Amino acid sequence: MEFAVLADAFKKMEDTTKRLELTQILVDLFKVTSPELISKIVYLIQGKLRPDYEGVELGVAEKLAIKAISKSSAIPIKKIEEEYRK
Image (cartoon, rainbow, N blue to C red; front, side, top):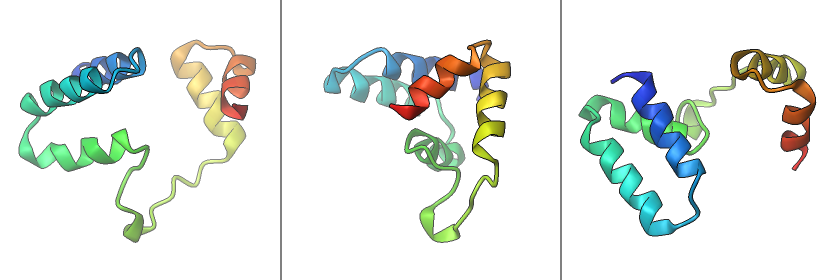
């Protein structure tokens, strides 16, 4: 699966608050996803990398993560920090 497909689905989910629309976006995403990738995508949707019982942590300092997000998305650091505080 191309990352663009996943990113597009995440963008669509972010842009709506309608539950039925969210469900349809996920259905469409899972239809084009190979069975071995579905669990990984479900973890990402939950904001996780692995199941909780595996105890996987990113180990990235907060400031470093903010800088990385800013650099990769071209969003100013102050804007990211404001959103993070919410």
